[in-house]
Length: 117
Image 1 (cartoon, rainbow, N blue to C red):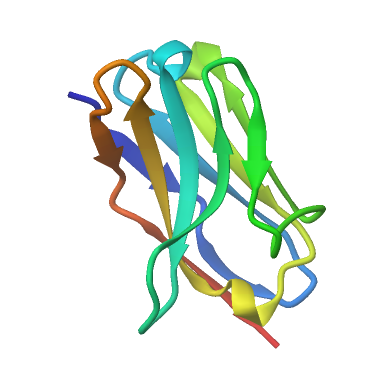
Image 2: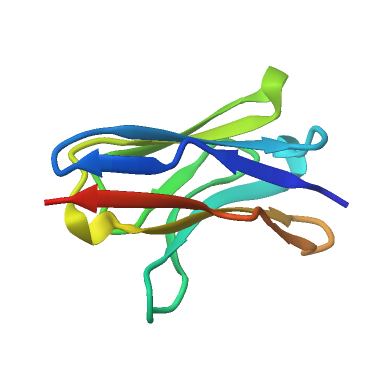
């Protein structure tokens, strides 16, 4: 079992920056793909960025060049640095961990990001 706790959401003006954090209850990065997803009101949950155990990253087209996923192994924490934020980035952001061995899937509780125009 893995617990994920997100933090760092909030209200920011368009063009601003936020950094989200997701701390896992135990060391998981070597055997898990970590990801950030978001869900806007009335819409499905979509992937924003992912990072494999080996460190390979992937981004949704809508955030490429603006968002960066990274991790600190010693802190069991994955980050999402969000720059040049747009109103359409407004959503609840969720941290996700998927085991590459068992395919067990874990979600955090979500953190709200609101970008005002």
